[in-house]
Image 1 (cartoon, rainbow, N blue to C red):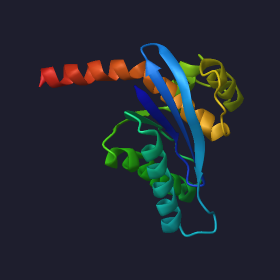
Image 2 (image 1 turned 90 degrees about the vertical axis):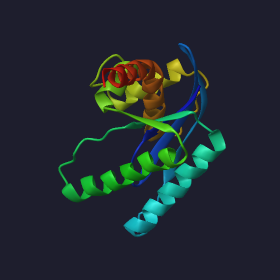
Image 3 (image 1 turned 180 degrees about the horizontal axis):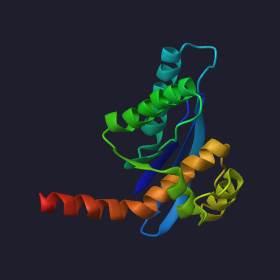
Image 4 (image 1 turned 45 degrees about the vertical axis):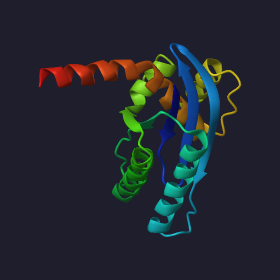
Length: 168
């Protein structure tokens, strides 16, 4: 199963694609979608949408996973990040993909073993878990970590959904 993970950001959104075959994970690709800081917010959101759409079209993932974000101290920055995150959720959904969301602490705990791991630790573990990963930067490493987290937790999420449907 091909999975894509996203680390949302308005300036830079990281993405990472992996193949999951049972417990075996393999690296496919990673990269960054960047927007022009001089462009208007609406133009930047269009750039983000187009970049993510192109990545999904190129790699044809089966499912997507997005890292949830925490509120920043700066309300304006938080609002802009939320709008970018909305695009990151929307694009794979428009492509017909199931989209899962994971808290940063769960992603770090899954990949590193500690929910409070530093970015550098995440990068090191991603490279260990996915030999041959090129890792275009910290945001791409985080996106690969989200994909790894999804690979490990998607089965549990499926079982919870199935139980919820039978309980109705």
